[in-house]
Length: 144
Image 1: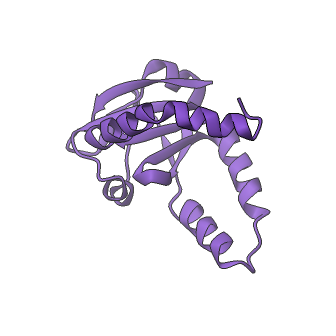
Image 2: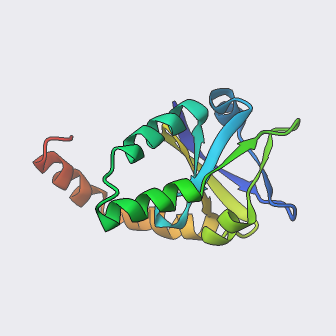
Image 3: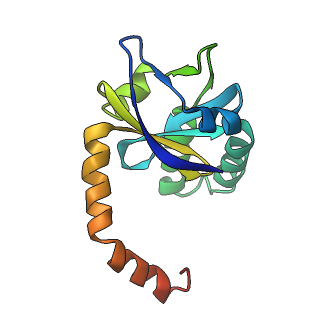
């Protein structure tokens, strides 16, 4: 399980340290890809296989399905953790997420999200301010 929120520095070579708790779950090799809300997703190899299975079930006859498959899969790369616990963020993903020097790594159960720190703060404040409304909507459909 990947949980928690950590702020780290993205160095000039586009490397960021993964928290030890995350490294223990992710292992040495993982998949990084574009995420929603202009963040980056990091999956274990096993979780990425599950995502691929779900994506492969989407119809290629529907434009939205094709577009989302392309978005997720074409943006994916296998990456490895170096000897001091860092990963290299590919240029196109750094640009996609508009990452600056400070980034937030947020554990979201089955994956990690990597956010620019300022973008994360804005997003988190928005969600925190509407958490009651979100909970009520989820309750209406029997989720909470």
